[in-house]
Image (cartoon, rainbow, N blue to C red; front, top):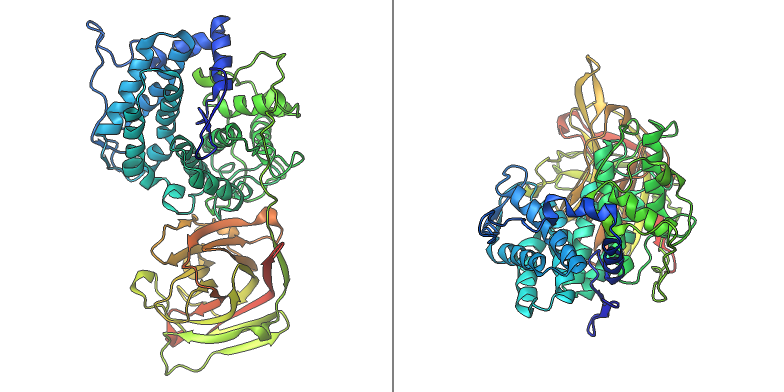
Length: 584
């Protein structure tokens, strides 16, 4: 294949779902030269010419099932995972060897699943839809542009399958925020891969936007400036999974002409920092400068250790781009002993003396638009009670510049879908894009399940749509001692949209003061929290949701003692700030 085929309607480049013409031609060259990595690839079960074929007749076995699941049900899960991988491997084998049997097998796999699979039956089937399906799609993308017997019907079948079965579980494809940490990276990879195959420029551009701005899984939320990722403190396997999915997605973007590798800059190439940190922290068995951070909203006490020895094509891709394409230093990746160990490492292996040329059409993303904050006077905030018992005393607000306190009543409810919220709200209307930041410094009473936090609402009525993040008080055992603790910061919304959310924070994180941020960009609300300080490195993404695109929304602080007979509850705050987007 001489080069990319550019779509006349979208401008997207094909094949370009992670394996493009450049990589295919390099693989063919390595195959012709008798590469050892090719032999390892060819000997994997998914690349064998006998895959899913009868040992006697050589005929293909039945392929595809109606139901597939992962999690609460694992029905036909292994078949789906294996067949998706085989579709890609068989397509590559066809390109390298020219043996049509491989193309026939890959085409049959894709046809079988695209026409038979109708239902997801497991609680975690989104992993299959967002992750494993990428191999199925990448295999089809190769055949579509290299195999003469691939037909428009084959393409239409797969697009119909993606539209009706797979993509409803891929968040960007249905207009929803990404998931978090490794799940967010997998979600992102699924969306950008499917968008390219479907030649959907609009969805592709939404993926680029999510890479910069998603409230849970933008590059800024997935990887900190020091290289930690959202799963670095969880375990090294999940940290690897995050990097693997993210690297695959960034390579898809590269093949479409966008350089996300050196984003936000060559000096702060966040993905490189993530891969380098992964290798360094595992080789050194720790990190003395660990930042309690987690992409799920979980703050981990230390970086996870334990060398990962396989599934490391993220390092192979990183080396190919950062070292061999850009000539950048990636010394920790080079030191890591388990590179080029996977069957699919073959996809990205260039001779050591090769310098890969940067195509002329490669471009960078537009500059990130950040919020600029100014102090907000508490006198500019208004107070309202929402659904509070009218017999209760009026709320009291103490104001002192950008600090103060709010004292009020409210019974609140854990089941927010019932629309019987009851709380006191100190707020400011914000029109258009904007941000609200505050430091909550404490409360005055130990009331079980009392709740305080920050909230944005579209109306000041009890049945309004909202997004919030808050704390509650609980009496429980900590280190075998009964004591009052601040329950985890939890984020919620009520608006009918999908909501990415965080896990519980460990007890050591439950301390005042605590910073909160609510950011609005268009119809998206991003929720952040930090127990340390307002430095961006410490912000934990707590959630993102879609709010109805009202011109004006109401941002503020809420308080609810839960048990009004023990109220009012007083919450203190300081450092009120309001944010506007740069350039607006």
